[in-house]
Image 1 (cartoon, rainbow, N blue to C red):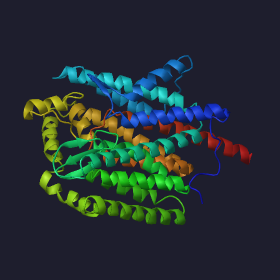
Image 2: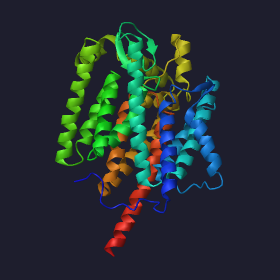
Image 3: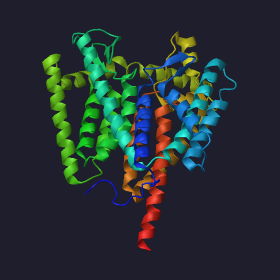
Length: 419
């Protein structure tokens, strides 16, 4: 039994073949540029990323056609939070930092509303092909960049804070960066691809893409990311046929054994040993220093619990108090500290509404399950990452809105068949 439903209207369905290919190419490019933006950008106060250049070109082309349809409730909730987030930056101890947050929010909202319109002009099958192609390209290039970095280092893992192409040597661990600037960011980006691949595993190329994605995540040696990956894998096993579940489990084990062999041959250490050693350092490094950072953040929250210290101000506060500007490494705690209880209520409302919307949709249309699984993967990753303002998450919101529209069209068509 295929994971997908046997009825789809593929809204819009009157797209010329050539136009369809062009849209796949453009959307693949957008997804790829979104994926590499953390590492490849130009700093001018704000980070100018590749996707922004493509966004400008596409907006120029579609400018006379862009329309904004009625927002869904979860969209209104998120827009409401981000409006409050910016307003909370009006009066802060560090207004320059808050101004950067306002600029980033404006860009991301423009990006969101454009993607919401643009995705409605693309067939759902074409969106899926763009996800498949960009997932393969991002993971294979990241894996290749990682291997090139290891070759340049002579497969020497000793050292700390050393970056070479797609590798970061972190306390004698060779961690995969790929085409990003941080192993955890790499995994966050990959959640969309892995969730899609492993819930559409009846096609062999999707199963292969999922295994490659899993291997790349394991090579990041990120403890939080691997825990999130396990959660996603368990959820993926809840959908699909028994045969596909068995293929997924056996294939994942096989891929792990191949990776283990690679490490044994070239690094004289097994990947399994590396993972065990990495998790064994939690008590020594306090979650890479996160526990101490969270303690500092809670102290700021207790000082201003209702409205918080101000948007994007935690780094400046921490720099003043501890001499080091650093992210909170927990999106939810960062929201609580910077926007207070009021801001947290806005955000929780938006998240709960989004989860509930996807659960209801998935019970009617199986195709929605992979988006729900991806969301759970994102939320679990956000407990160890600062991602209040992130273009990947905003694109995901637009993708959910587009998928829900597809679900509505499918239901309408099914009713038409019955009558």
